[in-house]
Length: 277
Image (tube, rainbow, N blue to C red; front, side):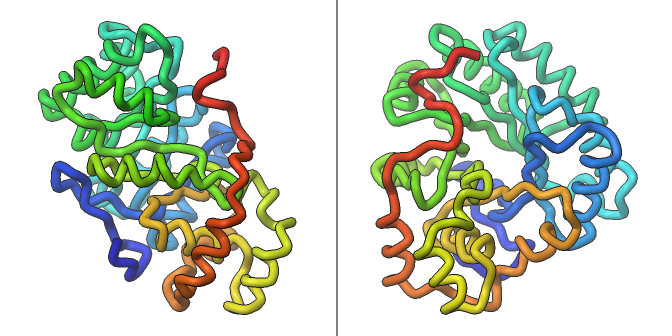
């Protein structure tokens, strides 16, 4: 990944350019809060917005994009099919419903939100159809571990282009990261700041002082230097702007390894092998 500026991209396996820094809107309220957050991000130069059907804020994301001066074609928009909608026909319907809410006629990236047993292969088949029809520029998965991917490979005609997972200094999953890189699946982080818990880690505090940056900036830059696309969430204009101020410093390889060594396999979100929703 060539880390240059906020509009910098990584090339997916099918040649599509995906901005490596974006705004996530998990738990951002529908209405003014999400419209404002997306507007702050687009004003600041972000060109990648990540939502999901289950977040309940696709309409607000669509409003913010539609009313902004930035062209829709210059925005990389991601949403996800929710577990209750998985299966072939129901995924096709869910996709149309998401497009309606987002006020767009295509997606840049559509993800299978969780690996629902007995359903994700049929869900993936629907994504392959939508991709073949030209309605999505890239397709991928979220929360898929190596064994889920290997199982999906048995029937998939198209290899997922992205895998969005919980990723932060306490949950690096280096073997999974390596596996995805070997198969040209772009790793993408959710909860990169450990839902705020990262700010309490002494090593991260020390390194932030060393580089004269915030702990958030340190971690997000570490994500990028690990080759991981990242989508920090904030509803505050100042945080949205500071989260993107990552391009005037670089973390030494030694310090990248120190941060990676914090890994303890500790999740702040659900386990992809043990979820019940």
